[in-house]
Image 1 (cartoon, rainbow, N blue to C red):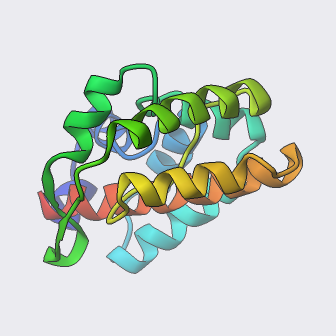
Image 2 (cartoon, rainbow, N blue to C red):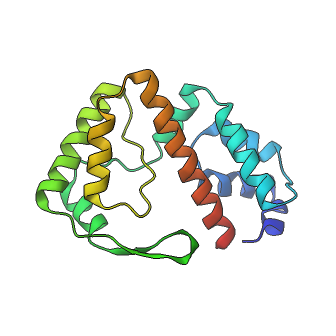
Length: 169
């Protein structure tokens, strides 16, 4: 979809399109109100501005729209056993994760969710399961007030990538 097409979507369709990028109701509403936008840079700046204006509750709402890393080791194996095309047309082959890594991710995410009250959020593009596990383990030692800001920053990167993909579709 082009930016012109996005700008010209009816409000309901624009809302639905933006919801695919971020699960925060407040963010989507603020973004819809900012349309039309003049260019992609303005769109990205507005997305960032609106994200950073949200409350912690809004951030947490967005986190609930992500699949949980953990719980289903078979699903994790399938996720990390494939190759994917990442942003800007680069190919990144994701290493096949060991059973040990998958089990550690599942356990780590459960510990993370118990500690912080939301799932582990990470900009996963281009990262192997082992890299994600290392990030998860490192972030478990964070204080809650620091971790929410890190998770929100990761969500902001994910939202930007999804906006880029929306415009590339």
